[in-house]
Length: 229
Ligand code: C5P
Image 1 (cartoon, rainbow, N blue to C red):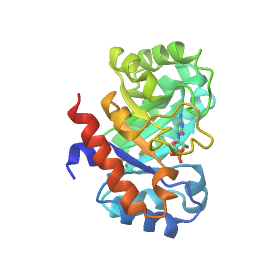
Image 2 (image 1 turned 90 degrees about the vertical axis):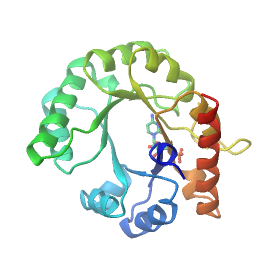
Image 3 (image 1 turned 90 degrees about the horizontal axis):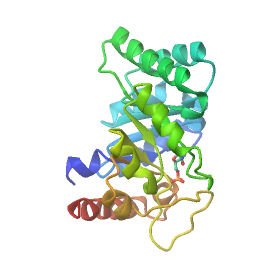
Image 4 (image 1 turned 180 degrees about the vertical axis):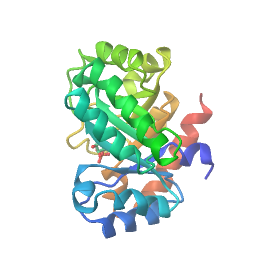
């Protein structure tokens, strides 16, 4: 699988057990190059989860969606970035000064520890929400605060790219399958065709009877979608 596909595919390890997360990540690592560590796994394992994913050869998306007063967010971002995570995020709903603090903290933490600065993303509107009226304002805040990109649905990729921002897209489902709690869903092929820089896929792969088959199908769809670009 080409690195252009593998580097875009992010597996959401939404389990509260590092051994289980590691097992899934290892099995699908031929197709997925990035591991998402979110609250559930972080609560169980802490920063050891980042280290374990790095040791499997995966980049890490630290999906802790920071959202607090600027000083607290800056300090938290700095602390997470010291672990060398490759991608981090914060809620744009926290406002522009909070996002600036997030970017500053992420850069400082990486620099202190000798790492390349992480990609900083602002969460615009959750893909489980149908009301996207806040999207345009949050996108503009992401841009003016110096974030590298946004977390958005497949339908919003073009607006982010027009603003010069990268896109990380959750809410990915195979055609004809259950959307579960997600509302604004895209197939892997359609998200890739729309230009998603990263696709976050959780249950469609981790909950499949055959995760390797689902992972390879997602990668094939992304490869197909990219050739249409
Ligand atoms: O299982 P599923 O593919 O729905 O998982 C999507 C993942 O993307 C979850 O881990 C969720 O936390 C994350 N995410 C999201 N919507 C956002 C940001 C992150 O669904 N706006």
